[in-house]
Length: 332
Image (cartoon, rainbow, N blue to C red; front, side, top):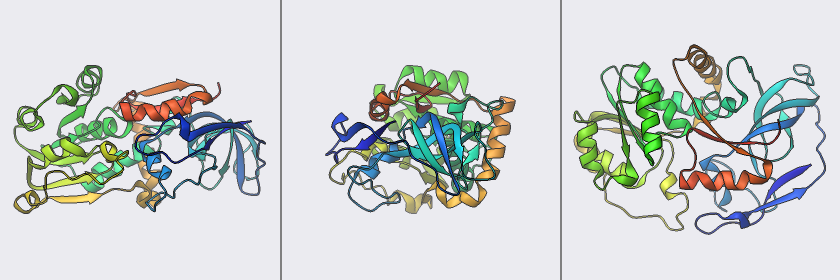
């Protein structure tokens, strides 16, 4: 089979030099494992952190390792009583044509609820991140104004829609007119700001969020976050989910010092790791499946064709190529 290996640690923004596609032996599952023919694999911004030789919430990849990420596929061999060949499952696998999954961590996929790529997006890790990050950390109340950066991505687009279901006014930041139109016309956001065509984020927020910001869901960091902090209302809540604007920085950037603004607003800023909510994953999944099946929440995936193009799909995350979830189709 073919599998992508980590070739070298990048300096700054990654390039194709960090990836090496190799022919390798197809693995054999051991007791409690499943051998899965991968249909789709996930590429996610957090993977950039795993390319660094430093400790973080996700273990770094070693040079030479097979790259790892979420997959959806068909069971080929099962060494677990709960699964049989032909079952469709999702779990943590590898960037390869075949992947071994831990059966206890895998989950079944129901194509009658949604197409397979959705199980790497709204019905997978990004959906759960949006669900717990907004509802538990953001604690939205009816009438609140919720601002989302990276709003046209897999997490941000779900955050905004759940906020609307909770009776909130929702404002999203995105980087193209196509994305901002998708947010307002299709997903029901009240306003969307194209940050690439906006010189003054604070002025744009004055128009889009005239009553200030009660909940900020931060996927980006950088100047957008600096601007939002100046608009936080009393007792606002900030969920820090990602900082993609800084993932390729070789040195810690120094920007405006915004912490004094939290004194007047008494805002709460809390970091978010979805794995902390693992005991409640089934609750989130069941609710998200109901919303998707009923049409209460929409979703979109950008599909890149072919395992050989997985690095390009990953690099495209940093130039904003995707709308919704970025996935790679490995096999029909």
